[in-house]
Length: 283
Image (cartoon, rainbow, N blue to C red; front, side):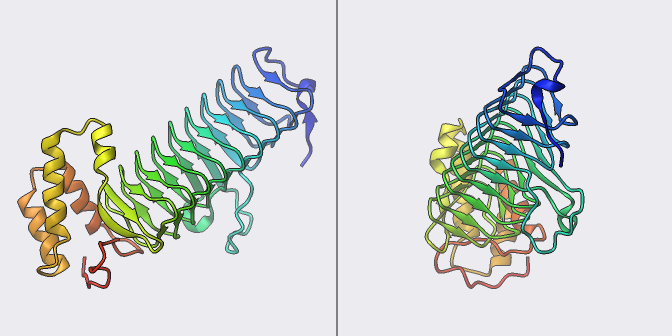
C-alpha cells in the first residue's frame, strides 16, 4: 500500500487535514472532512461530508463512512478480520451517518460466508474499545458501552443498548429496543424489547425504562407485559404459548414483532428467563 501526504493531492479547500496525516491518493473525501494528526486513510476508504477523524486513527480496507460521523483516537477501522475462513476476498465495511466511534474501537469488514459486508446504521454510539466483528449488522440508534463485543454475524436491532463488557456470541440476534446489561454473556437470541442480565445472560423481563424514555404509551407497554407473561409462562409448551400469544394479540403490532422474531429461522435458540432455559421448542 502506497501512501502520500494528504496536502500533495487534496484540492478541496474545504477539507482540513493535519500535515502529519497520511492519506492515500485514491481515498475519496467529502466536503469539510477533517483528519487529525498522524491518522492514516487507506486507498479504498470513502469519507462522507463533515466526517471528523481525530488524531491517531487508522481507517483502511473497503470502508465507507457516512456524513457527520466522528471517530476518536486510536480507533482501528476496516482491517481484515482475523476469522480463519477469510481468504482476502474484497469485502466491505459500511458505516452510516451521524455516528460516534470512540477510542480504541475496532470494526472489521465482512467475509464471503456472511454476505461480504459489515454494516453499522445511523446515529449509533460505539464507546471505548467496542468490537464489531465481521458480517455484523447493526441498526440505527444503537448504543454499545465500553468494551462491548459482538462476535461475527451478529444482528442488532434499532435502539438496542449493549452494556459495558457484554459479549455477544456469533450469529446471535438482538431485537430492537432490547437492553443487554453490563458483563452479560449473550449466547441466545434476545427478543425485541427484552432485557438480559447475568454472567450467562438470561431474559429478565422487558426494557420498560427504555420504552418509557422513548415515548411508548402506557397501554402499549401494558399489552407487551401481558404478552411477555403468556409467552414465558411455565404452563404449557413453548410452541403452544407462542401460538396462543399470536392469536390473542394478532392485532397488536408490537407484540407481533416479538412473535415474528421468535418464529424466524435462527442458528441460536431464544434467550429465556431462568427456569425455562432447557425448554424444548420446534419453532
